[in-house]
Length: 62
Image (tube, rainbow, N blue to C red; front, side, top):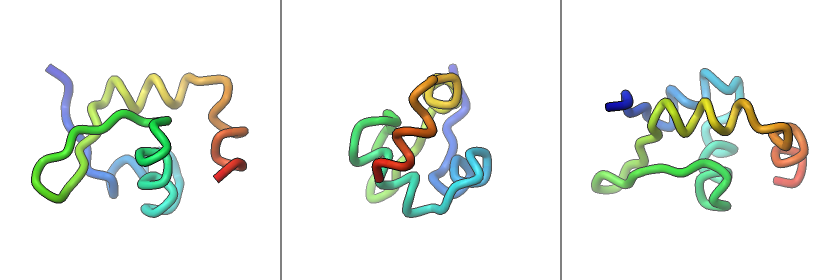
């Protein structure tokens, strides 16, 4: 089972702003799990996003 990361942890790994990661989640570029009012991101989902060739263009679109 994958480790679940908070949005803050994911933002630090991606070197992005917290709100940018939330925008990526809301735009379905990063799949997350909602637990109550918080989002959790599986490590495998974050790795999948990081390996995506479209990562830079996705961020510029936001």
